[in-house]
Image (cartoon, rainbow, N blue to C red; front, side, top):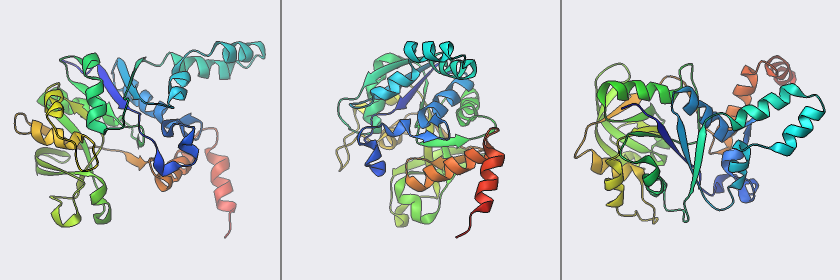
Length: 287
């Protein structure tokens, strides 16, 4: 079965970007001229997935408005003859089929996935996090789908991280099967460096089999009161094989301020409209 559906958890509070995220969803923070979540939606679409389930929470209506039709704006742009901008605005509402489901309490990523259970049904699906912005020639999600098509099991995107960052991630123990492919042997959520099984961290792209729902339902909340997806995957590993793929591309942790700024600068430099002028501006700076 092909991957037809994707879950985008977007109910987090975005506390690392306060005060701006007090009224603005972190997923709507702009990288050059597009909000973070639009990059993720476009990656999903280009990867061949047909349907997206965005898991939202209170104060996230701007996400729904962004992907909805904006009759008033479109009429104004048309009346002023700004047809290039009109085309951009209309394109956003036609990108892909999107439905929304509410996570009423911030109970973790595992819980956010569970909230979308009834909309997924009994089929494999993708999970993507908007604050992991991945710039790749072949979309990261498509790379994972290629692995899934071969092995028909859950697939995790992974990358090597620095020692001082290990405790921020779910980390795998794995046997290497190829240049970028691993079979997962164990998973640990945010281990201290002394207990980390490797430096291979799980990044915000997953292909999951529907059996993960039962495991998440039986996963106890951690010390913070959240249901961790990594813990559910660890339970699933006792019943099914899980693969991990070291994706090709540049990943920006846009969920923190430095990563957000790095993504903004590097993607601006790649922009056809802004790149040359922005590069000249950066070269002109002196400190």
